[in-house]
Length: 291
Image (cartoon, rainbow, N blue to C red):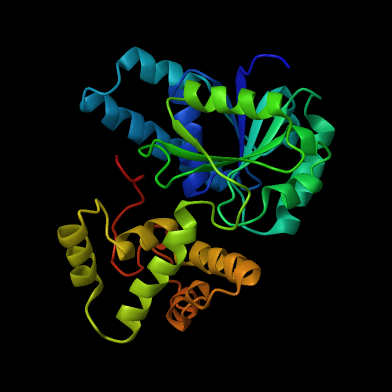
């Protein structure tokens, strides 16, 4: 299996844009694919701003910033993913959407290319089954925001080869991340706890127990968390939380994983979080978290 030099990221929403920053910052040629040109344009601007802020803070040199931005290829053509040695999916938490994507990628990517999914709730084995290369498929769940968080949950599917997993693990470390190995299990480690926990916080707001700000303050001050659950939900996006809940509840039937009604009402009102300018909090501008 050849060396990984070019990394592809399919989907440039909040998570995909962050993963692309991680790969480009580490020196990989990085191809970012999305069907929407406006999403690519927004992602590139946010990336430039994030790197510029990193330079201002002394975390990156001007030379490294120029190299990282120069290594990025933003495209609406799936054919450009054909040069990738590793492709990471960051599209919707929907098995059919992921199967459709990987079926197309299998036709354009070289045989040696490893496919990975950033899914946090769906089965790696089930996604891999629709990829055309289930022996060269692995779960790589980055934590939000990916450009700041180092942890990656690495999960082999039932047919993932040892060589594939070792290669993906090495690429993860080469990107400067800290991988942990998990079983192909709903929610892996983090979301097994996080989805019900976030839902509990939403239900506290729904019941009028406390304001979002006071809930977040209590969690940060009392438990030492760097971010409160409602702040995190605004970063994740309420539409994404709905998909996560539906996926995990559908697999586990865990009552606390069921989506609270407030989430659906907020989505209907367009209050999706940072991406729409309003969620549990109100935001100005669309700067990437950490910039």
